[in-house]
Amino acid sequence: MAKEALKKETVEELIRKALEARTYSYSPYSHYEVGAALLSKDGRIFTGCNIENAAYTPTICGERTAFFKAVSQGVRDFTAIAVVAGPAGALGELPLGAPCGVCRQVMMEFCDPASFLIILGATPEKYEVYTLEELLPRGFGPKDLEG
Ligand code: ZN
Image 1 (cartoon, helix red, strand yellow):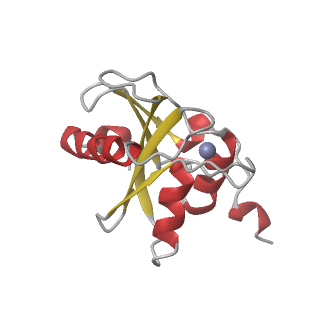
Image 2 (cartoon, protein in one colour):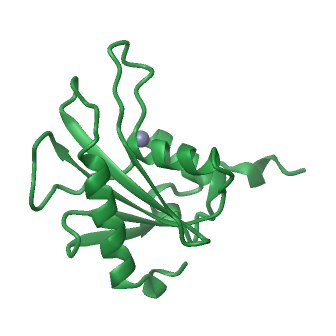
Image 3 (cartoon, protein in one colour):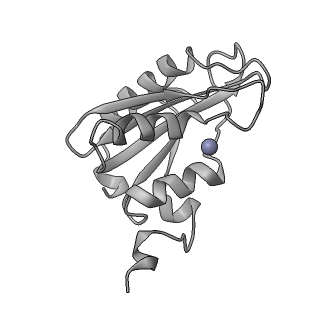
């Protein structure tokens, strides 16, 4: 989807769902709470939060939780994801938190880098929108393995 085609109402809904998902963040170690809301091409929204672990490496980000929930339910085509993040308990206007490199790579697996949109939300009304290509230039994806 082109950035211009993204409706303000859609962005607000995605950010609100991401904020709701953020309330479920399990982050007793970093105290950094993340929520995500992933919009599929058929109009469904899959949410996720970060889930940490005492052994550290099993920890997963909110963005990947949302992707893996969708893919595990048979959905592989996506339009946009909203991400909200901030210190535990932070309310109101949040600092913009961009997806980590691992999450960008997972997006690269399932999304067209030129058209998949990543919304970084501070509030439902205040946000920035990037294409995956902007956040992961020259990303490596399935097309690179095609003979
Ligand atoms: Zn991540």
